[in-house]
Image 1: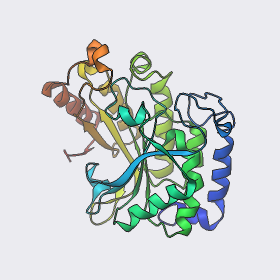
Image 2: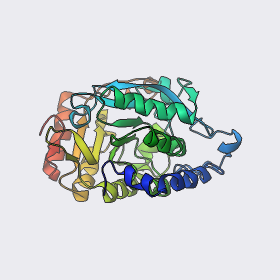
Image 3: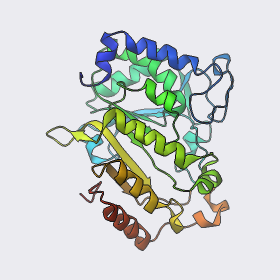
Image 4: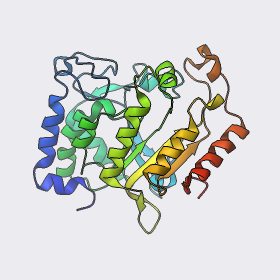
Length: 302
């Protein structure tokens, strides 16, 4: 297969076909597992708040991502507006839950990808892309015709439709999902979604099937594969033990970032279990559980 993955598909004319198939998912929207069934092509919006045109909050080189993404030149992040999750503690709530974005044309979105490549970014990192996959696939052939050659990273919340993910097979090089919760009730309470653990596990299996474990070049920069994030929540609300055991069963070589940066944001003060940061002991316990499960590629602790 060519690298990045999407070049081969473009040469075969397949990218345009994927974009058309994704477009059909907007008619009675089934882009994400919520399946709102709203007519996004007619300007309607569901939970995600986005109709048929792309919405972007900002874009630029990012040096705060995981080391394999950042490298020397940074990760070329495009912060897509809104989200298919409704996390009450979201640290980017101005972008995800409020109107922190603007409508951009297909050509503008393609231009952003090319701008980031020109600045020396190692990848194009779509942040919160789940609900805007059709818009991304529309823009990608234009970007490739303009010279795009860097890998694509899909930076998501883990609540993904298998039908949509299959349209990204051979398009996305690096999947970077969060695994937020192991408990269905916790997910429903704090992110307003149904069946999150079951949906996320199926999505992770599909992502790993497509791209495998994370691989890097000689400089330690990510080329292809799965990189998982897991945010430690206070009172073990995230269910870290079950999460890391699942990831270890998927592959002991799964690259995992166990994150300690939770702080009460947005509406977290309305939910008493979320009103404090995790203790150092809680974070160390999360790391211990990950190692005990057999995971050995822990970001910052390799």
